[in-house]
Length: 260
Image (cartoon, rainbow, N blue to C red; front, side):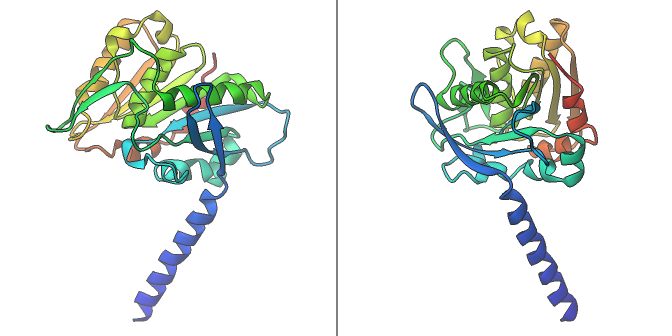
């Protein structure tokens, strides 16, 4: 019984600590030029100094974290950026926007009647409201003067990985590096402009939701364009390959080594 009591106490302590940590991400809201409201959380560096310029990392969540609570988007990845060692080694501004429940980061058509899902991408029209708002938010933060414009980065998982590929298509000059995780995109839309961005792509080989082939074709296209791209495919891993990607010891150092 004593062991059970200690174990429960330990879990409660961890839970409280996690909640307290996540509160370091400040809650904010952005309204785009189209009138779309985008909830987002922002983490400032330790010992943040207004006027000093810092790298910025934009993180796009998956479909399961959509909503308007301005909390769910922190479920995956947020604690990586809260680790004291990472905040000390990699002082940066980290932004987690939240996509509405009825929308999507990427312009993707998803057929959920099969597994993995049948997913196709069409970049011919305008960006989705949430992706457009996220990109406008990055520009607003740049205009505020605290972002190093040569060190703007983007990553995302699942739906967010798809949004990452499309964000690079929309604004290849904005980002220095991108890390799409278990996502996909439109390889035919990619040109030499997109190839100037450094890529690191992750996917689980046994992904039963987003077919691993979607990352493979994007990587092949990037290689054909002579882009700087590293692909890591995890054998035996299903859709949660973000756990593996975020656990890579150089996940953050790779980003911060890249500049426009």
